[in-house]
Length: 201
Image (tube, rainbow, N blue to C red; front, side):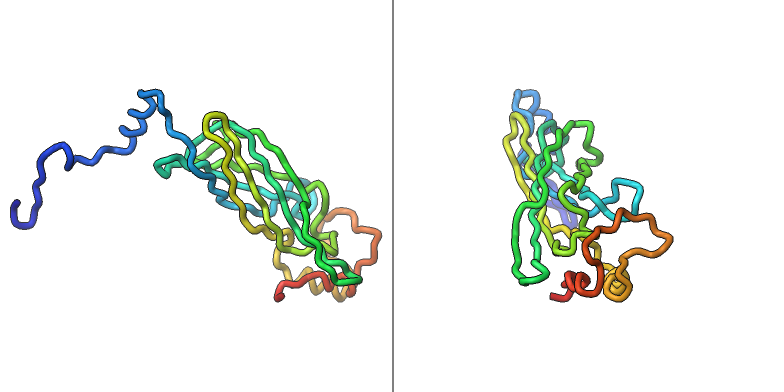
């Protein structure tokens, strides 16, 4: 022991690099296995020519036993649960809005994460007046030799946009004249339907 410096001897004092440990496991026919699934993000995404978001992009990362992201092959399943408020009775209903199944390939991963676009087939949130903005998405990744792992996160089906809400309330239209948007529904579209936005609740 020297002043200002500590000198330790013996093999116990030498830290083993994590890379060597993983290599040793692979050499012993014990490759690293997934211990958990991280849902890095879940956001609205635009998948066609108009301005309305019409899908959800999810970024997932399988985490190995040593906390390191892994690129694996498997199947990703996702479920979107949402809530509807009846405009006449005010009753709230909770249920499954969409379900997806997506093959996962090792080459899909960039910097430890894979991103997939999940199209909304059952609804167009900007036009579905009874659909509330708040939802929950759950993803499950199944891979041979690893098992099944799940994660969930809240997701907004409509972006917070007071200007669009005010336009709907007072002009009956959520879009500016220059915007390319989808076909407006035949159902009434005005002040009463504008009451669906409950951002402050």
